[in-house]
Image 1 (cartoon, rainbow, N blue to C red):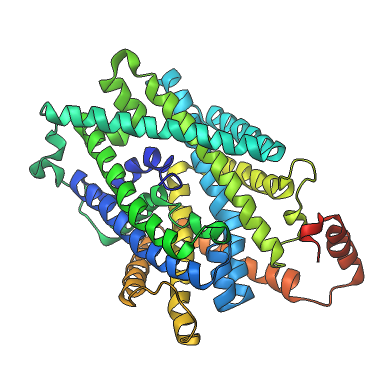
Image 2: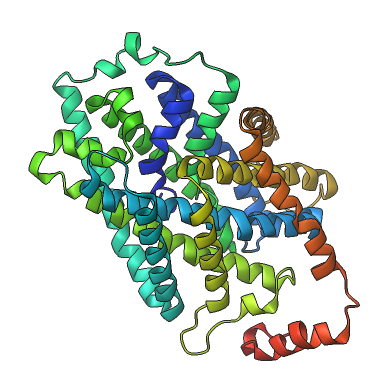
Length: 445
């Protein structure tokens, strides 16, 4: 649950409600979102023990469909998914830090970007300096997000016990601010999926999991229902003290919640959420470096990105690339659109991976599969996936279409950088041989 529960629950409720159009439908989206993640997780558990490689989606797709499809997944992750997610979390951090100083208005654009950039640069420096510092930050700041969510849920339940649940009554909960459409509901699911992202993180370190046949399913059956319950209760708590209009008008939902209910202790909420998002940025920086290493190990990224500092044992080049891409996206994106953007690409990669599971069963029917889910599980997921992506693309053609275009820009990069083996000797000398000699001994060829 610690990998899934993060800053998304402090960001996504506003977007889910805006697209769902009513309190009741937004709560249904949160519950169903957890169910969809459970289906996907079961498929990933089978893939994790059938193809026991670290690297998650990228490793599975490369094994099943070959280098080009795997590279496109890697390209979109390095160029879009991780930097965009980091940008969204960093913007949330700056909004929650600055909101108390700008209670009656939105924090200035330049101030949020500047503070977000400083946060990204600082945590990149920490991750470059010491693995121990990075892991300790993650451990300490995990407590902050659990404190914030526990406080919100507890106060919300007290409010409900006192009879403050008008927005949750069925007669009001399903009053729609606009006529519901399949396209808008699809976008609501995309917003919720951002909060659930992280359910497949265990597959990125499969090689390090003890007894994956037992522990992967166990992690799924415990974590997904628990996270779904926490997210649903958190949203119920929000609606116990805020009207839908107040929630949509808020730039920092948890801060508004704290100001209405915690009185003199309202300062606890922005601090807790800021600490939570701070830890979330640290975790994504740490994970992105592992993906870059997997890509460089397969020869799909320059060897430079697999280099590790001899003294600090940290992947400095990979961290600097992710940091730079994140700062660029910070300057050109708005939080709400960025979430649709990254969630669309995320779902696209999930669907390709789970389609790969079905193809791999047909291609290698006699392969040992310690975990084998019913064929209805991946089919159900893919049906939902096709409907979600189709209507999302119809509702937000520019935002979603740009994601597809950027992913496809990886095709010429793959053929020039990876597929083209007989490059001029000068290119090998600069990019291949010299970098290969600089690698620490475990990573030399």
